[in-house]
Length: 223
Picture 1 (cartoon, rainbow, N blue to C red):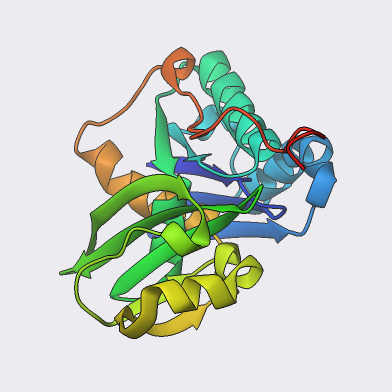
Picture 2: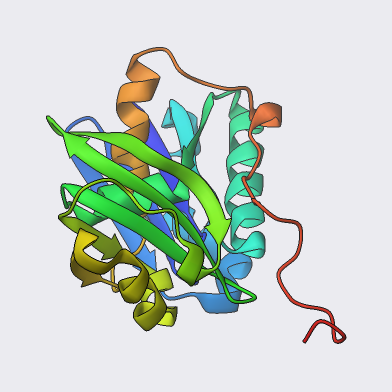
């Protein structure tokens, strides 16, 4: 099946197109230009693969949590393409995609949520499959829920923004930190493909982002 995956929960525009055993990827540090660039980059990715939108079988997108604007872009584009072509949509958690992209056995996926907080979740890989140990949440770094046992790798931009507090909180549970790891569309694709094969899918209008909170900045009085 031909599956287009979109991940824009960070400042990186990440696209992946799975065509059977082959994966075509686009990664672009787009920043605030994601909305401006995404449709052209999707067209270019399809052309490189020798396909058109009409050849797609499904759309997968990183559903969050993450950048509010980025989540709306990914969801909106996925909905638009899927509705126009009557395609199924699969929403994949961004933190799960981050853990998948890390490739480690035990991952604490963490994104900077601003306002002194982080989005986080913990996953363990067993027989090549990720299992959720701690579900997606929003907390201050010094209140991060602690996963059981040791050998955990802290992954993602949340560790870049709050490394000292998170490392102190995890203590001996932490084995390593890989703050450079980002959620990627290729990881979204790897997670979505078996779900699609198992019959999981959603209509475009039912695909929605996961925000975990309703605002991105403190009010003046709160600051």
